[in-house]
Amino acid sequence: MSRPEIVLRPARAGDGQSLFDVTAQSVQGLAKSHYTSEQLAGWMGERTAEHYEDIIKKGRTVIAEESVEVLGFVDSDPGEVTRLFLLPKAVGQGLGKRLLEAGVENAMRGYSGPIKIESTLNAQGFYERHGFRAIQKGYFSHGVGGEPIEIVLMEMAQT
Image 1: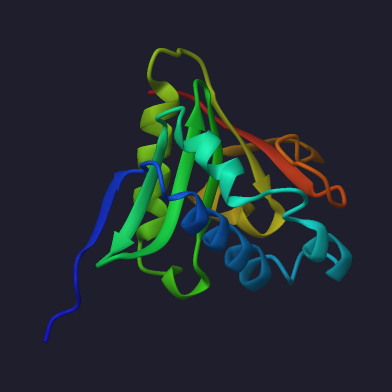
Image 2: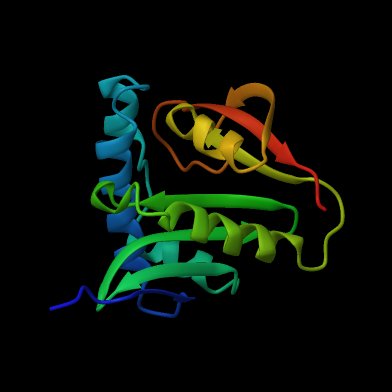
């Protein structure tokens, strides 16, 4: 029996809990080698499923789904890929690249100039392999509560 195909689709109302769950599992499973236990414990801050429902309403969130399971997602604003999270079990299958491409495409809509991303320390190498370059270190600016999270501000020139 073959494995179901992983499809990318726009996020829709009701997907907020899945995005919350993917983010929480991704942080706990993939970031632990680069952040303290205190940072990991507070990472989700005051986020809720409703927080992600508000993000979905902007119409720039793409979900990777296999059957009915959400494996990852990407969200963008004009000029910036704001979130890209994968379940740990989905890493290494090319899914991150597919989501990043969708996120960059959405970030480019109606925008000219370099595309920015605030990369977690553990994801910096991934973004570098896909055309982003580090500009400076800083702290995550999209957070809602929790300990400060160190990031690397990166950008990619539009081609």
